Length: 429
Ligand SMILES: O=C(O)[C@H]1O[C@H](OP(=O)(O)OP(=O)(O)OC[C@H]2O[C@@H](n3ccc(=O)[nH]c3=O)[C@H](O)[C@@H]2O)[C@H](O)[C@@H](O)[C@@H]1O
Image (cartoon, rainbow, N blue to C red; front, top):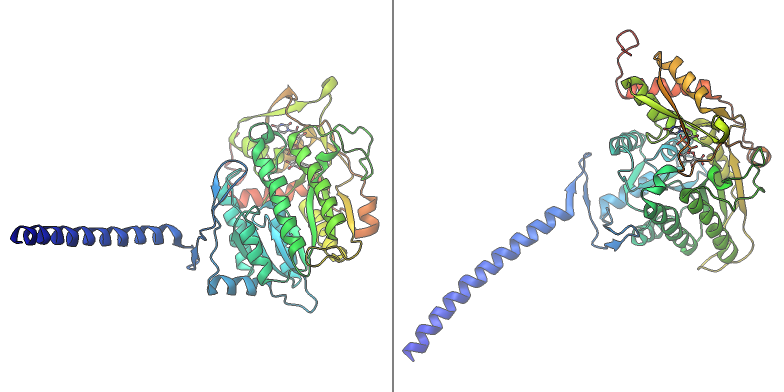
């Protein structure tokens, strides 16, 4: 009896201390979980992470960077409320990106309601994306940190907001990077696109979708200038192939579900707040650093040429596409009638060779470039692009007005200010 009492006391004590430890450990675990799950953002708002993790097509696990608390929903609602009668209500994907940030600001300026979404991936400097986000926030535009593959997040957004339009600009861009990281293109440009189309077709009423395709779909097409009806079945890069696949996927969502879809084939867009992976941007950086720049030469030693298009012209084309999109006809995931399906070139209509682009940069930067001319590597590049924009002109009123020289001057002015480049007098070669 005594013995059993003794053992009972020992066991009880052991139980007591073990329970206490277990309790303390649980509290510790809970604290760690709360710490990981919630963080205070720069603007002082508490943002949480929903536990709905999902596996991305490029292998990693991505978590939804949102929590549907009251504060978050309030920010969403506020951002999406138009400030003019009949203002659009737009979901802008890739809003912290180059084109996305410019289009968002233009929509906000004219009183539309919008919310942005961006996954802030590190394909190029994240600080530039954060700076764009800050710029948008200043104008009252909320940019959600999230991935378009996150169906739970999209459903949450569509459940709360009746979007009239989706401006889909999130993508894995860049022609040459596709050889290094092909799955990233499948993840964003194919899986992400389908996730977005699914959310859009399930919404009631369905929004109209305007999205960014690419001039690269023309691939090895040699008929100039490139018209929408030309061949697009000879992509030269995996990037181009994913954009072409996107156009075909868009057609099925239009055909089956009555989703209004407009695909915009952008021609080498450039300008202030641009993409550091693009030639005009990286050349600027390297010229200022005194580093050698590689200028590719095409077959038969020909210069490569691009129909470089200034961002402001592209923004006008995007906004006009939203305004003229026409309605989706489906509801409850069912088509109720034919809906618009459109494809437009948005280019500048006057190609310029890469050496001339460099000449313009040298003049605006007041620095001579150290140039090396090398044979174009087999990296998916095409020798030239040239847009016929007459369709966009008739249907959207699109008319590009900025030539490359003027546009690059604006870019250089922005670059010098943004990166704090010393004035030309102190700049050394
Ligand atoms: O319009 C398009 O469809 C595409 O335009 C650009 O692709 P790209 O025209 O290749 O633009 P850059 O990467 O800026 O290259 C411009 C030109 O400079 C050349 N280049 C690039 C890099 C380099 O080191 N040297 C060089 O000569 C390229 O071959 C190309 O001819 C964008 O990067 C794509 O995302 C977009 O879809």
